[in-house]
Length: 147
Image (cartoon, rainbow, N blue to C red):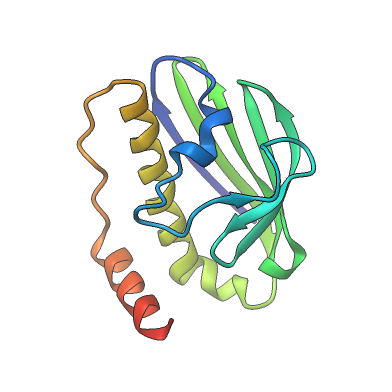
């Protein structure tokens, strides 16, 4: 079972509705949806594919992973008192049982922290950008060579 939680204190709300706009596309594959954010929107970023299964405007958005990803589960971005939270829950299967703990988790964590940095900047907070670990830098370098 995977349960991965990130939370950041950020003033204001409505950040979940700006997830595509605030996505760190300058550092990661862009988040692309086939229609405006809402239930039924299909999309993803890079090889990660999902569908929006719930949306409470200004409060919460939930995406279910595509079966081909290797994780049966969801990820949720929501407004919480004083900030935002991202929660990924799921059951890995197939190759993801190995790749989640070795690589995907670390890349996911770095991406979410970069997203939260962008949200904080949009909220006019001073931000010292999250620094990627040596492992994340190595994984990204290997991915660039393979691509």
